[in-house]
Image (cartoon, rainbow, N blue to C red; front, side, top):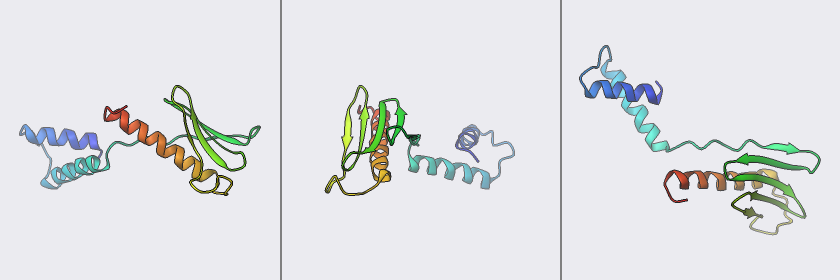
Length: 121
């Protein structure tokens, strides 16, 4: 049962229009809504494209372009109306790999989206 179907069933139950809904279906609907509320909003992950010419990865977002690359160490940045950058917390020349830089960019992106949804941006 999708969250939309669950909400429709709960609305029918509230108005006495359960129709053919069984108590189990009603319980499923309530559980589906509870799960959705517990999980919070889903933020779409960035879609990374490898740019072989520069050996970087780029991902477009509503905030600008995220990029990941290696210049004497892995880095990530957001370039657009808002600027953000990341380097490994230890020696920037350490080899944490592009996945660590992408994870940092994903975390920044998620935080920005959630802040906007909560009205904090």
